[in-house]
Image 1 (cartoon, rainbow, N blue to C red):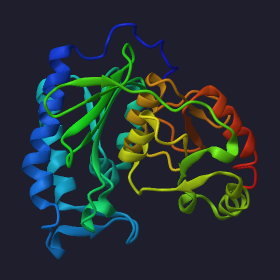
Image 2 (image 1 turned 60 degrees about the vertical axis):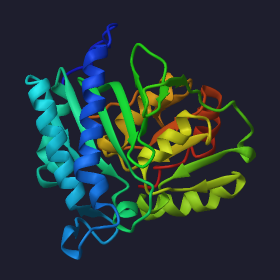
Image 3 (image 1 turned 90 degrees about the vertical axis):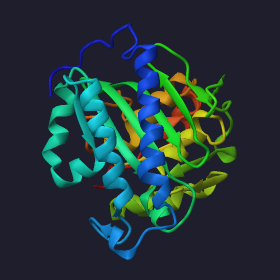
Image 4 (image 1 turned 30 degrees about the horizontal axis):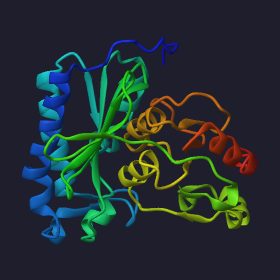
Length: 289
């Protein structure tokens, strides 16, 4: 991966290109995702690593449609999706060197989708040399989205195109904080450490859907997300949405997040004060692995 270059001061996509991107996501949801929701045959659901890591016909078809659209609109960009990467992990190596890269998670929350739970979304991140510069999280159920880029505050956009500003929650004491942690995906030693320390927090859980976890963080409903499972398609857009809504996102050693990273712990929080408090409380995380 090349040395990280300064983030450009101009928006990564024009207003017309953003509209084109949003329309593409909506078309993919209407054509490939929603017709299959609660209508999947057994042969349209498969496992990847294990029974908790699923892929469906909707994931594959939506990613193919979005990929084709992006490659036509941005022929010089690197376009990578979760399902393509799962088949060819070497695709990850190009993200840090790409001047313009689109990262697609066509159906984030696939387990929920496959089980008929209406808690899933489509995530698109645009990166420059691995640095997120545009993030979009779309909810096919509500037909709305949150979006931002490196020059703009995060906003919530309805299906009619109306926008309103969003912001992360105000700082609060540790024992009043609620957040999402992906503890079951951590190494055994870290899982034990986490379970010994989460009791002081007001609430800790997971939605099995990064799209809605980051939406709730960016809109002020929760206080933090802590994850050691650094799939770029899960985090790159949400990190930027958190930051542009008033929060802080960084690795637990306080280094900046980059979509090319594959190891370490990423903490996204509603403010710098909350980030500092959570990071101090879990400072030993990773020390025994």
